[in-house]
Image (tube, rainbow, N blue to C red; front, side, top):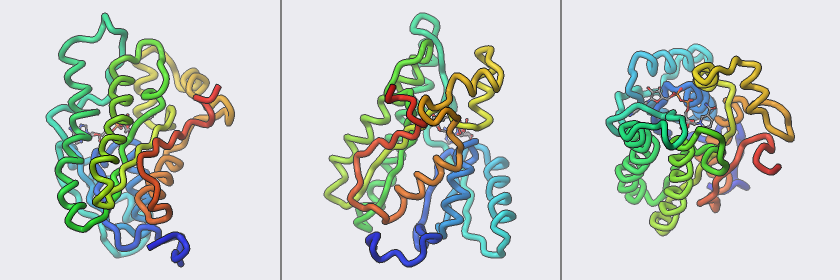
Length: 244
Ligand SMILES: NC(=O)c1ccc[n+]([C@@H]2O[C@H](COP(=O)([O-])OP(=O)(O)OC[C@H]3O[C@@H](n4cnc5c(N)ncnc54)[C@H](O)[C@@H]3O)[C@@H](O)[C@H]2O)c1
C-alpha cells in the first residue's frame, strides 16, 4: 500500500504485527501505545514480564475498548541487561565494555538474524533500530554507550544492503535526551537534578527536551507504508542539538 492509497491516517498500522523488544522500557511503552492506537497487533517482548504486562494493561485501559491485540512474551535479546554504561576510557571495566556491547549491538544483530528469514518469506518488513545522538557526537565520559550507538547506526546501514533485495527496510532513530524516567535516573547518578539535566539536554534550536510521544510517532511512521522507499536513514530527533 502506498501513501496515496491511505484512507485512514489513524490506522497506519492496521493489518501489521509490531514486535517490540525491551517493550517495558520507559520509551518503548510509548512506542507500544502509539503503534496500538494506529491499529497494529503487538508482540511485547521484555525480560521483565510483570512490567510488560503492566504496559499491556495500561494500553488496553487507555484505548477503552474490549479488543485485545497484544501478546506479551518473555524475550531476552542477549544475555545481558546493561544499556547505559558511561565513563571515560580509563574508568570503564573490561566486563562493562562486553556487557554494553552485548545488549546494544549483539542484541540488535541477533534480532535481525532471527527476524530476517520471516521477513524474507513474506517479502516485506521494516526493522527500526534505536540509535541516539550519542552515536553521532561525543560527550565527555560517555564513551561505551556512544560507541555502541555509533555501531548501531552502521549495523543498520549494512543490514540495508544485505536485506534490500528482499524488500526489507532498515532504518534507525536517533533521539537526544528524552523526557523519561531512565534519563533522570542517569542524570542523578552523575550528580545532576532534573532541572540541570533538562538544561543540559534540551535541543539547541527548539530549546526543550524530546518527548517520548515524539519518538513513538517516528517509529509508527517507519513501521507504516507511508514512505516505503525509505531505507538506510538515521532519523535524528534532537530539537536541532547536533546542527550547531
Ligand atoms: N532515555 C533517553 O533519553 C534516550 C535517548 C536516546 C536514545 N535512547 C535509547 O532508547 C532505548 C530505550 O531507552 P530507555 O531509557 O527507555 O531504557 P529503559 O532502561 O527504560 O528500558 C530498557 C528495557 O530493556 C529491557 N531489557 C534489558 N535487557 C534486556 C534483554 N537482554 N532482553 C530484553 N529486554 C531487555 C529492560 O527490562 C527494560 O524494560 C535505548 O536503546 C536507549 O539507548 C534513550
